[in-house]
Length: 141
Image (cartoon, rainbow, N blue to C red):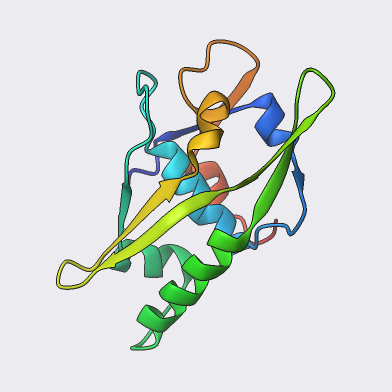
C-alpha cells in the first residue's frame, strides 16, 4: 500500500448522505481502495489489501485479527450512501459489492459497487484529490 497514492472522488460522492456513516476503520479501507484506482482506469478491479497492512492500518493485533477483518468487511458491505442526482433524484448504493479472504496468501480482496463508477472513474471535472497519507493518520470521522 503506497501512502503517496491519491484519493480522488467526484464532489457528488463527497457530498453524499451516509445513512449509516462509515466508522474510522471503514473509511480507511474505502479510501485505501480508492487510492488504488488509476486515473485511466475504465472499470473497477478487485482491490487487494494484505492482512498485515490491513491490521497495521486499523490497529488490529493478535490472532483475533482474522475474525475482526471478517466482521469489519461484513459491516462495510452493509453501509449505504445516498448520492444526489442532477435531476433532483437520488441514488442509494452500497460502497462494497464483495469481500473475499484469500487463505494462504493473507489477502483481503474487495470490490466497489459498479454503480459508483461515474463518481470514481475517469473524472475530468468536479472532483477532489488528496494524498492517502493525509487521512490514514486521522482517528475520527
